[in-house]
Amino acid sequence: MKTALKMIVVTAALITAAPFAASAENLDGIVTTSETSLGKILVNTSGMTLYSFDKDSGGKSACNGGCAKAWPPLLASSSASEKGNYTKITRDDGAQQWAYKGMPLYGWVKDKKPGDVTGDKFKGVWHVVKP
Image 1: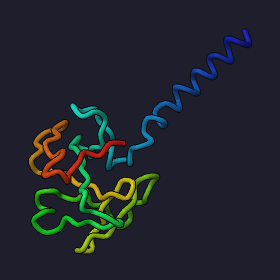
Image 2 (image 1 turned 180 degrees about the vertical axis):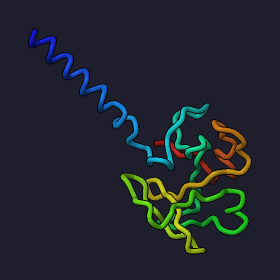
Image 3 (image 1 turned 30 degrees about the vertical axis):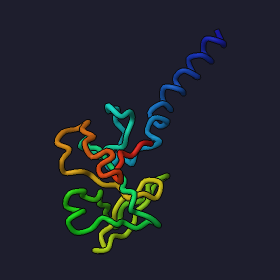
């Protein structure tokens, strides 16, 4: 009887902890993960793919002006809190942008529906972001 009770308690603990383990790469209300044709990737809350840009470095975005119109930055409010691998960078225009593992995050205007990954490997410098 004690063994059965212990099993129930352990099982309940595992079930309760499972959502937290699965969300380790999520940023509540901003970024989550999704399975796509390229595997598990980061997406915004609308399910749209997030990308990184090889020309970004040192916690700075190199995508401004026309580039930012085609590749909209994932903006952060100044009051938003950083969490785990998610940090904020300051763009040239003063806006705050989310970054994952130091790489600023962007959408792509040619992705039309959740699961689209049309920007991956664009010009060899844009990539889906994998957790």
